[in-house]
Length: 220
Image 1: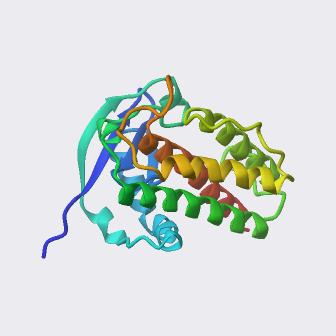
Image 2: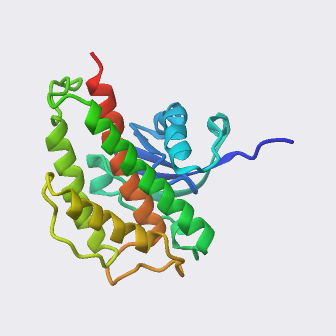
């Protein structure tokens, strides 16, 4: 039986393009153009497979062998800066209980993998290609602080937790997952907020982007 092509959404900025796999929150990579973005997405299939396995969601990395673009949106300033910012039509559709649970599980797996990597990684990480990049704890603090801001787009209000306040971090994540894991009519959860599908993609992308960076910069 022939495998269906993997559906991909593109957010096209003037200096960066983001490719996001439909239905796989967090599997989202950028490149300087469409070709580079699609290649980056395919190149990260094996790394995303680790996330799916942790979430106990069946996943075949060979999905990346056949990509088809099903939606395009013009990007904005955040796109060019290096973050996906647009909500696709596919992320405004009704979300039933099973897909909602799946999204929540993939997001939780992303957090679990980041936490595990943080325990292994040295505090001082190897510098990036241009000689920069946050060290481990500053990276984690950045992720946690961003999530407190993202949570407000879902109607979840927490003060940004301190890196050492594990109960507060877990409480924030629990409340985010509760919203993303609930069925949705596809509308933003709050006024000027995000849909649950976009939130799952954006938050998981941010976690995984830094997880993979930490892994790469931990290597000698």
